[in-house]
Length: 162
Image 1 (spheres, rainbow, N blue to C red):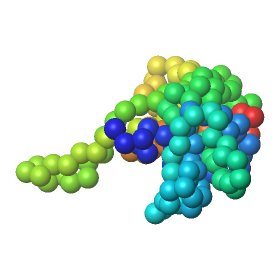
Image 2: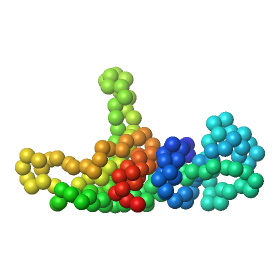
Image 3: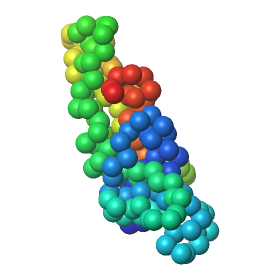
Image 4: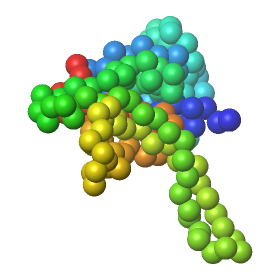
């Protein structure tokens, strides 16, 4: 599997750094034209390792967080101040799909990943018992690391975690 599909995108990595997330990951985006003497066509290379500093080079690095690293950063539960007893939400991460071509003879399905927090309290049996409350809209992406990064960004921007 291509490494770009195993880590969050450069755009999301930049936003996480802006939000103050500690830049400590297994992989890093190196945003520089020169990389160990080799030229990059897109100026963005994923590099591996904790010690990525190169003397005499002005490299700009962003942590390219893996799914495991992002899951570790996400809190398992979020509690908001209002709507008791429906104010406690648990992390839920799913692998799902969406249909890109509904033609039965040429059916095309893409795998997607969904991150959200679901309310851990349910309504008493009745009309609303089937409703499933979520903290926010689903954070969806074809890359699982991106779905998790989007959720982490939401929590940080909303002040739900620090």
